[in-house]
Image (cartoon, rainbow, N blue to C red):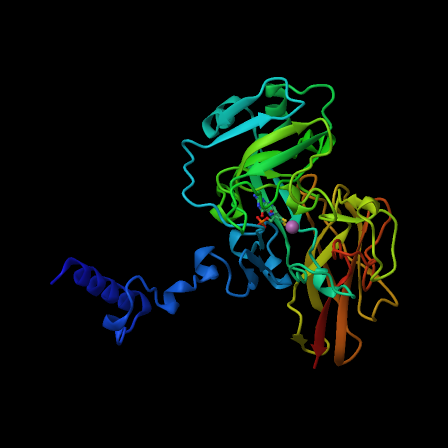
Length: 406
Ligand SMILES: Nc1nc2c(c(=O)[nH]1)N[C@H]1C(S)=C(S)[C@@H](COP(=O)(O)O)O[C@H]1N2
Ligand SMILES: [Mo]
C-alpha cells in the first residue's frame, strides 16, 4: 500500500469513530476533504456552553444566554454570553505572554510577563457586571444593524487579577494622561494583520478605580480561552467592549483613545435624544460610559404555569452601571401599579444585586410579571423601550415574563 493510501484509510476510520457510524464511500473522498459533520464545530462543546444558549453568529462567534440561564448569583462559564469581533486566538503560550504598557503618556515603557504581574502586585477579586452595549438591540424600531441581542448579553462572574492602576503607576503616568486603550491578539475577520478587530479603552478616572482589573482568573480558575485567556481587562459597569480580552498591550494616551471601534458611531449614542430613524452626524454622537439601570427576572422561566391560589416566588438580578440599584419593583397589571421587591446590597461595587418577591395572583388566567429597577439617582428603567439610537445600544427596558395561572 502506498503511504498516501494508508494515511487516507486511517483518516476514514478515525472519522468513522468520531461520527459514530460507518463512513460509506469514505474511500471515494477527495484528498484533503473534511466531511461536513466534522467541519461544523459544535459551539456548545467547543466553549462548554449550556444547551439553551442561543447562537447569533458563528463568524465571529456571538452567543447569548436566556434569562433563566442567568439565575446563579455568580454566572458560571456555561451561561456567559460570548461576544467576539474577530477570530479567537490560537496557540497562546502563557509562559511567554507579555503585557506592554506604552503610549504617549507613559513615563517608562515597560513589559510584564504573567508571572511578573502575579508576583509584583497585590491580587484582588471582584464580581463584576459586564453587559454588552448592544444588549437588547433586537427590540429597536427602525432596527439597528449588528448582532440582534435580546436580553442575554450580560454576566456577572468573579474576576481575580491585579489592579490596572498599580501596573500603570509602576510604569509611570505622565501628567497629561487622559485615556487608556487596549490592544489584543485576536485577528481581524479579514486576516489582515494590520487591522485590529477591536481596540477600546476608558478615561483615566475609570482605569484608576479599585475594581478595574487586569484579570487572569475567572470564577477561581484560569479564564476560559473564549473569555480572554490568559489576560483580560475588566471594567465593570461600563459597556463590556471596554473589557478587552487576550490583551498584550495597554497604551496610556494623551488624548481619547482612537483604536478600532472607539471612533465614528461605534459604542456611541446621540449626545441629545433624536427621533426614531433620524440621521445623526458623527460629531453629535457621544461615547457610552456607565451603563444604565436594568434588571432581569431569572426565575421562573417565561411561560411558567402556576396553580391557582399558590403564590409565586420570583427572583432575579438588577444592576446600574457605576451606581447601585436603590429600589426594585414588580407589576402584574402591565405597569399600572407596582409593588416593592426586596433587593440585596451588591457583594462589592459594580456587582449585580439580587431581588426576590412573593407574587399573589387574584384569579386564574394570563398574566405578565414586569420588573423595574431604579438607580440611586432616582432614574428608573423605561417600561417598553428607551429612546431610539442609530446603533441600537442601551436598551434597558423592563424585563417581562408570561405566567399562566390555572
Ligand atoms: N480582544 C477582544 N476583546 C473584546 C472583544 C473582542 O472582540 N476582542 N469584544 C468585546 C465586547 S463588544 C464585549 S460585549 C465583551 C464580551 O465579553 P465575553 O465574550 O467574555 O462575554 O468583550 C469585549 N472584549
Ligand atoms: Mo459588546
